[in-house]
Image (cartoon, rainbow, N blue to C red):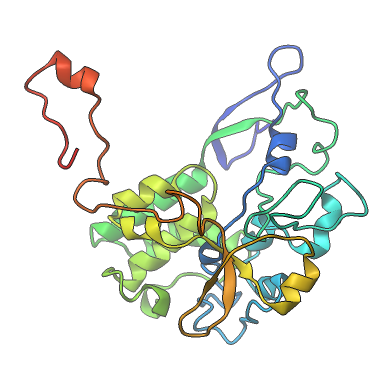
Length: 301
């Protein structure tokens, strides 16, 4: 129950004998994984992006990526040394990569654990009563910070009322207007470092809550949708660690390192297209157009 939880504004209750769900077991067994691009967006504990922080330990091993990072990373992505929390098989370690036997596969190596209730993964087959969050206070805080920033009205007081509440609850440094880091990963996007940090906070806090696709379109950053979906570093050590895995890779043109490329060679998905002239809007259904000749189809459709 979320009754009395000050962070949850609207939620749905499930009750045995009335309506149950299977969310704990389903999410725990669903294939997929977070991308390297997402994982790289987590700040280090000093409040700096990985490209700027001396605390960043690299990505030679999955475990290295977790060292001295925003605590929300460990609450969202599985740290392999905590595999015992996934109670399908006490002898099995995670993540497990595409091609390995036994199920519960991660396509990227970054096994998502957000929403897991480890105590219920085993027993809750269609008997789960885990409540569903519809809206939480963090979303309202992030909406406020972004609106103020886009209007050019954001103050330090606004940050302290919004983003810094989220950061302080996980022990992360405050975002300060006079100390905004300039992340080289985002200098080509045509937005201010402040907007970059506000968008980063939204991505981290609201991960897997259904916002990212519409946020990207709203920010007119559709080019992000055609970037390869990469996973963990895939070189000799990883191949030894994950025997039987069958993955394709992408090579970084600068470092020459190879990373799992989830959709490489997959028809349509492997070569995504985002047309800036039309894909920010959906096509209007033909059935709607037929009802009223004054309604015109969206551009490009």
